[in-house]
Amino acid sequence: MERPYQALAARYDLVMEHVDHFAWAALVERIWMAHGAKPRRILETGAGTCRLAPHLGTPRRTVVASDLSPEMLREGRGRLERRVAADFRRLPFRDARFDAVLCLYDAINYCFSTHDLRSFFAEAARVLVRGGLLLADATTATNSRRHFLDTHSHEELDGVHVVRRSWYEPTLRI
Image (cartoon, rainbow, N blue to C red; front, side, top):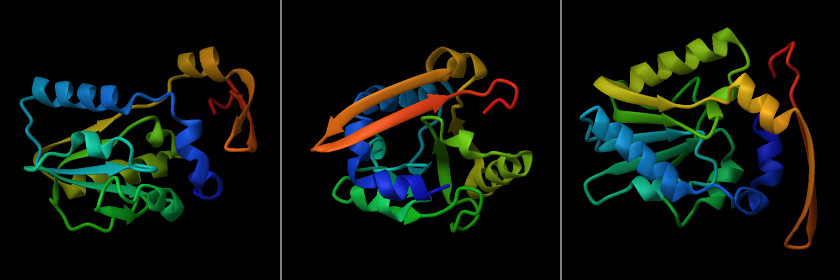
């Protein structure tokens, strides 16, 4: 799962520069507010190059970014001090360590089986304090049909040509 991201890590921020991480962080804050949550210890899983976590950090908060790809996390150095290479299905943290766990920008879609999904939810529950919040999103079949049914793109990033082909297989839902 992490191998494509190891190869892409150095250029990932350029590929994803269209993502408004400030707006994502503001949405997360609004959701927390709506639920009366004031998390001080936050774990972001699938954090990639740590573009979201700095927007959530305050002097009163500790934010830890985790990702399966060490290369992606290395690209995030300078953005966030606390970075841990970890599979979100087997987190290396003690029980009840975090007030909030995040799994955003469709990272949960990397759970390819029911077992993977159960493992992720079990681990999130284990590392959350009682009453802690898990916030995750997923790409829906409608979104996949609309944006990834069969698309091709080509872009040049720092002199490197990136060709991307995305497709959606409705019968398999992948």
